[in-house]
Length: 258
Image (cartoon, rainbow, N blue to C red; front, side):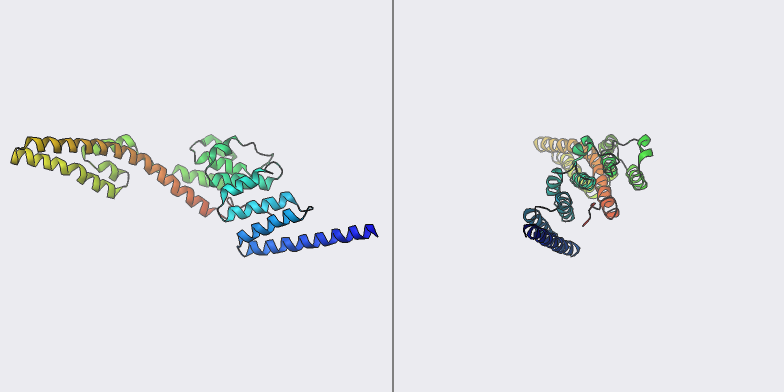
């Protein structure tokens, strides 16, 4: 009688587990990720026989789907050495949060799918060499080739241009509005100084205007230098977002099985 009771209890728990997981799957397919997470956590809490690794990975997947990458990292870290899928999702969350320093020092499981994310981390840190491309898959090679095509602006050349014509260095860095504003900012006190020197002979106003011109001129040289550096950073960020969008169904799709 006791054995029958244990078997019956086991069957009931299995059926409840199946029902709970089916409901969680339904919520996931309906894009109701918050409720799906709640249902999965409830299953872990209530069912001692629940597949902890699988459900944890599904929780991580849901966090990734709603952009809660840090929560995904915390959940995945508990079992990152127990599953290739959790490892991949852990690295994916780190990559999306740009925590490259952790990815760089992370030791992969044998034949890990996460190598592609480690390679992408190196690409966007500008640390991947041409000689390293032999190990890249086709998608990573395309991403790397696209990264190499991002234009770079020479900050010293930008500063030189602005030294000749204020604002020209910013035009060079494709910051047209800033360039026009900088030109007016620097030239205006220079014209005022010229006015006081030639027409009114007001020495005090002339020196004040020239001092203002000097400060704005030096500031423009620094601004031109900085704008060239920022240019590549902004272009890299644009490309980073484009890559995530273009490969959202492959490289950046979480690994999971319901």
